[in-house]
Length: 203
View (tube, rainbow, N blue to C red):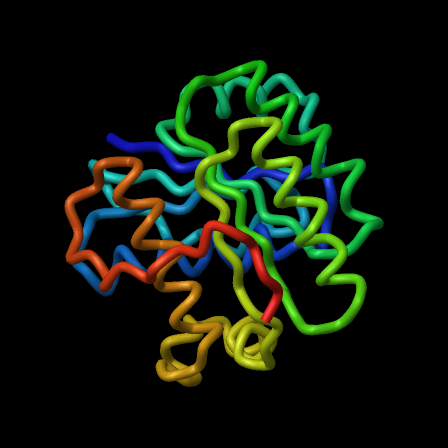
């Protein structure tokens, strides 16, 4: 069984939404998957999202990243996903999360920058991240543009693909799920590869 862990010290970065999207991604491809939430705030959210003998476990951890259960989960992960909002106020908690993850696992790390837009705060964050990723050797950094489809999907408790499958944000979410699956070696139908820029640009 493959274990994919979503973790972030900072709340409100889209950790729960993106872990839900990965779960929906696998169900659409008929991959046996279970979603586990360690966050007490969402303890009832995934009662119907477990199967017997899953091939993939998607784990949504709480913000208490120093919690022993969270650390043990990270240590057993095949891929760790760290969502972050592109604002300066997220940098400190984000770097602490990256440090903790790297200290406890050698598995691939995916940085999901959630809510990228053209405004100054986002552009400045992306410029900082370009330097930070090189320093920390973070090879996989993917962006998701700010979009109403993510809010609507959360309200409807469904995937963004059910709201608007042609939205740039939906395509970015699907690309994220495809990249996670590739790194975790989960056999799925891969999305067409999006050509990656050598420089991170907020669009």
